[in-house]
Every structure is written in C-alpha cells, then in structure tokens.
Image 1: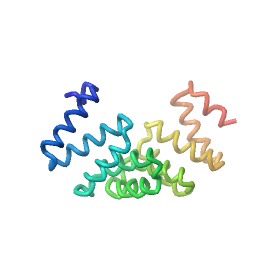
Image 2: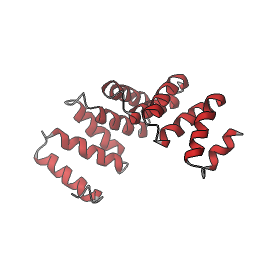
Image 3: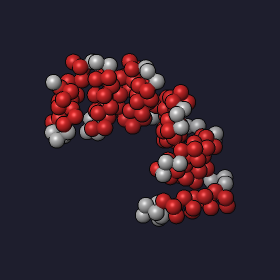
Image 4: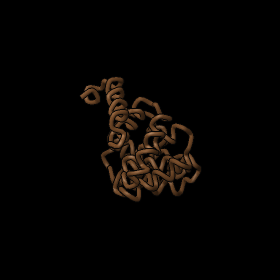
Length: 169
C-alpha cells in the first residue's frame, strides 16, 4: 500500500523488515531493489539485484533493472551483459531493446546500437522515447537521410518540440 501511495520511505522500511524476517522470499529482494532504483540508490539496488538473480536467472525484468542500476554506477560493460540476457529472455520488450541500444551507443558501438534502437522503435511505435533515441543515434552517426523520416514522425506527434525542427534543416 505504501508503494502505491508513493510513500517510498515507508515502503522501503516495510520491504527491509520483510527481508529481515523472511530472507528466503526472493521476490521481496526484487521489489526492494526496484524501489532503490526509483530512489536513485543504485549501489543498494545493484547488491539486491545481484542476490536476487543468483536464484532467479530467468527474470528479464530483474536483469533489465539490474543493468539500469549498473549503468548509473558507470559499469556499462556489465550492464550490457545483463541487458543482453534480458533481451534473450524478452526479445519483444521495447524497453529492453532501447536500453541495450543506448548502452551500446555509450560504449561506442553505434552500428550495433542502431539495430536495437530501431527494433525498440518498431516494437513500440507510439512510444516517442524510443523514436527519440533512434533519432539521436542516427544524427550522432551523421545518418541524416535515415533520421529524417523519424524526425518527421516526431514533429507530427509533437509539433511543439523545437529541438527536432533544427535537425531537419
């Protein structure tokens, strides 16, 4: 209830108590780790996700969230490994594809990044974040011809976004 009411401090306390009293209930570790990510407590989140994944290696969401925490700890290579595992488990997740693509882009592997960012944009055509990520990758690689149709879609969806208008010129 506390989590639903966005009383994060209370929710965190409840999950921490639950883990103290029943440490074998692994899902509690995952939920608390996710709360830690929401509160930008990445070190604690990473520790709990690592513990959780030791017994739940096939949880795509946990791999994705663990990788997100690792990114914020500047551990992009390890984050890539967990995004890839998440992608193996849930290849139709636009969020996972987008996260993997953004990590590859940061690692300087633009061609590979483009593949995942394109997939993310196709999997979630109404999610403009995915389209923005793809446009940023295309423009960053000076693939302007490939970026233009995506920029046009963004401008149609969000005409008030001036940043993209400048890119078309």
